[in-house]
Length: 195
Image (cartoon, rainbow, N blue to C red; front, side, top):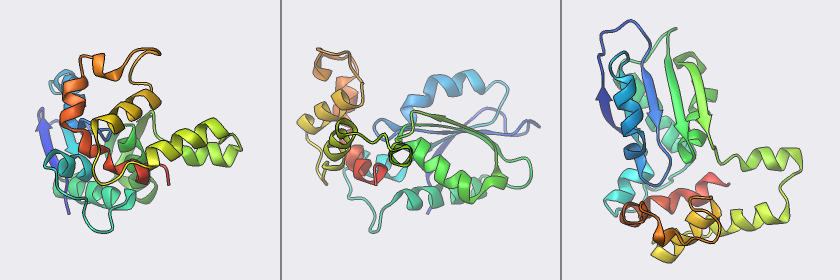
């Protein structure tokens, strides 16, 4: 299984490609400006995670869905795009995509030249350090409770708990709310991110 991919820039340049792995809400849209800046000098691959693609199309997640399934799909996608060998790629990933990219990099390190993780949902780090306090556990339980149908109320809870809006402001007042609401079904993977 491969991930949908948008390729920007010149694929014939000697520099390693940049792979942009999105978070689990608006997907590759979040990387458009970055890809535009990088494309003049690099080949840029923007992948769409399975959970986002299925959420956009309001399809159920594949049977057995997991972070591992996403990492396997990322590996297959990079193989298909010729990202192999000693050079590897510069992988940049955000939020849930950072968890997927880390899983991929740990299993396939020879294809990763560099790895930049932005806000990974690294609950396992908190647990290992003994700092997974009651407040963090409560947030994890809330995010893990998102089911197979994500309502606007669920989206609002998610946006507040992950810090998408300033304290005291409703996410529904944010200019990004219509976009978030449109693609909210992609959040069905939240329970997998905190396992």
